[in-house]
Amino acid sequence: MTLLFTLLALTSCSVLGNDKSLPEAPTSTHNSSYVKPPYAPQITNQVTWSSGRSDLKILAMTFDDGPHPQNTPRLLDMLKQRGIKATFFTIGRSVDLYPAIAKRIVDEGHEIGNHTYTHGNLSKMSERGVRKELDKGKEAILRATGVLPRIMRPPYGALYNNQRQWVLDAYGYPTILWSVDPMDWKDRNASIVSNRLISRASPGGILLAHDLHKTTVDAMPTTFDTLLAQGYKFVTVSQLIRLTSQAQQ
Ligand SMILES: [Zn+2]
Image (tube, rainbow, N blue to C red; front, side):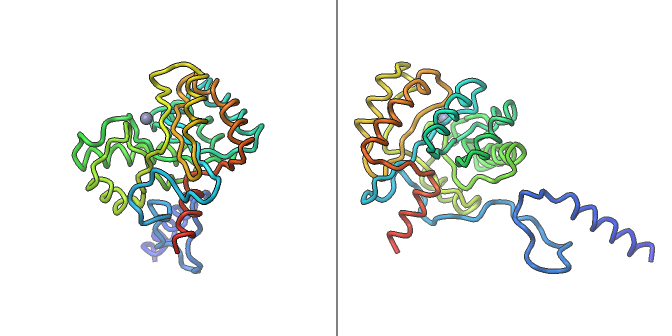
């Protein structure tokens, strides 16, 4: 009897301790044995994505290496003013430093992707090292925002094909690269960055930028307004993948 009581007490504690933001347990009156899914559902079987379908005038704008305490909120204001949804590949360590900004990213309808915890070069790491980077990056995002990332981008785009397949199998993450790189980390000049993004954008494109840099954020109003005027619609990476996968069926 005492044992039963103890078991019941433990069970109710673990139920109360469940994160409310995670998916509900399957319908069952006895869900105490339910184990939370460790990862968000997999959205695609395609290992690598550098662009999506080209028959729709859609673009996925992606911002890497944030959150940054000044530049990311400023960018979020710009996106909000225009009703644009973007994708942020955050560094877990920075998410731990600025959890409220990461939360704002998700609350305002943007997608958040795993960009590791320390921004290390995964192609030079053992499987254990890669796992540690992705796990810690994912956990930082979950702690700050209550959601799990569904996609990842390796720092420097550096990940071998066999590693990408393993990451998809182990985490359900497709590797997200890009079709346009404006080299904004190198050329800290808003008009250069803006001109490169605009002139190289094409339907289904995934555009790379870094919200870490002030000049990149300075480049965004012109970039957004010009591309919107050209008839482009901005979607998140997961939306781009879904729209593309639907078209392939
Ligand atoms: Zn990066």
